[in-house]
Structure formats: C-alpha cells, structure tokens
Length: 146
Image 1 (cartoon, rainbow, N blue to C red):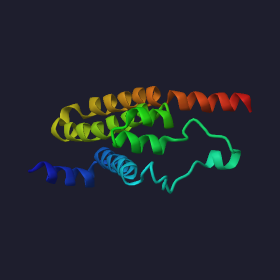
Image 2 (image 1 turned 135 degrees about the vertical axis):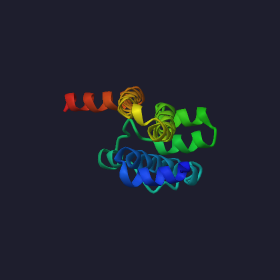
Image 3 (image 1 turned 60 degrees about the vertical axis):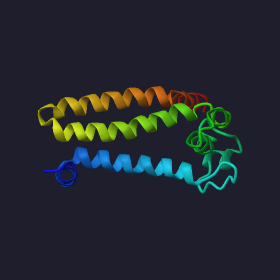
Image 4 (image 1 turned 135 degrees about the horizontal axis):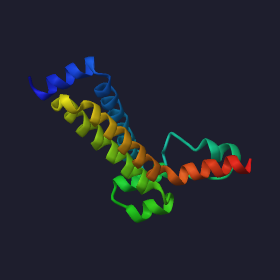
C-alpha cells in the first residue's frame, strides 16, 4: 500500500492523523495568507480588535505584517513590526513540519504510536510556551492590573 493510500485510510480511521492533517492545513493557510497579503499595500482583512476597542496596540499587533515580511525574507523589517513575530513564525513552521513527520512516523511505526503522541504533545507544549511566552505574560499582567 502506498503512503498516500495509507494516509487516506488513516485519515478516515485514525483521529490523530486527522487532527495532524487539519492542523497542517490550517498552518499552510496562515502561511498562504501571509504570502498573499502585502505589508506594502496594508490590505489585511483581519484587524486587531483590541486596538479598535481600546485605541492602544497590543502585544500581537503587527504579527500579520511581520509574517508577511518573514515570508519575503525581510527579517529585520519584520522585527520592527512585531519583535515576537519571528519566534511565532518559527513555532508555526515547526508545527507544520512536526504534523507531517509525526503523521508519517505514526503510520510507519505502529508499535511506537503511544510514545510518538506523548513526544508530540510534550514538544508542542514546550515550543508553545517558548514562542508565546511574551503573549502569555502580557495576558497575565493585564489580568493582574485589571
């Protein structure tokens, strides 16, 4: 059975594979969104709700610009739009790669599936905390000040 047939069968029968493929698709859409919408044209359809309500930028303001610039190879300019954009971009890139790699390993190494899922969850949590620490700190400090 070819890998594509195995993947199609696993998609129908194994929720782990289904979740991984859905997440990989969503991440690919985020990257496509970043590639399509231009920081030069400032034509992003999604705007910051926090800034619209409060009039003040939040810690995530400029992420769309930052992602678009990273996709275009303009890392320094991306940093000026959001200093945390690169770390969040790397998180999504790592997640896209992890979804593919762990799905393939899950299909090929049936005897290690439980361990693979544990490694996947653990790695994802660690990467999430590293990438989103500034955002989590901002949320918690906002809650304490409120």
